[in-house]
Image 1 (cartoon, helix red, strand yellow):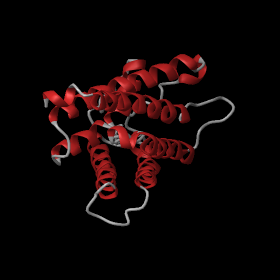
Image 2 (image 1 turned 90 degrees about the vertical axis):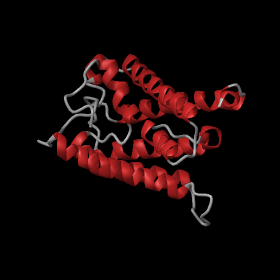
Image 3 (image 1 turned 45 degrees about the vertical axis):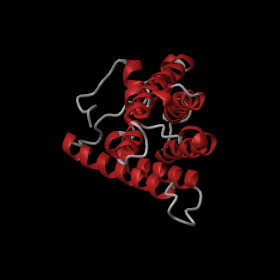
Length: 204
């Protein structure tokens, strides 16, 4: 484990998790900004999150695995595919990257358009229990897609980047109505820190 942290490849992987999460949060939250001249649609937001993930997996997957999501990183640790040290530093990098991405977006967006930076919250009279079930199902389908599309024991898995991007897209098409759709603790954490607003159901 000590040898792992001293390698350049390890440092690059951790930095890439920071950078890719920064970009993902910037693009995803940016697509949900409520510009006075053009309010975002659910399809627009879902496609932005999905295409961002697909592009980043394609660009950085060979360096760090492009987890871009603490839930995915922890799933890989539980599956005994990465070490505890890598898990810990990936999660820290992802959370810091999410804060940085949300912070940059906040800084470059006009004050009358920022809103709450699309923080996750309970929508349409959804209860915390209902939201928890929705997020578990959506996050499970994402994790299942990632494991299946990156399984070296399988042949003909197609394009992992495309599969994972579509999985994120379909999750948002459903989840936005309930919680704004998270499936990613970093995506929820970053904007909440920047606008200093943690909803009572942030734990979901």
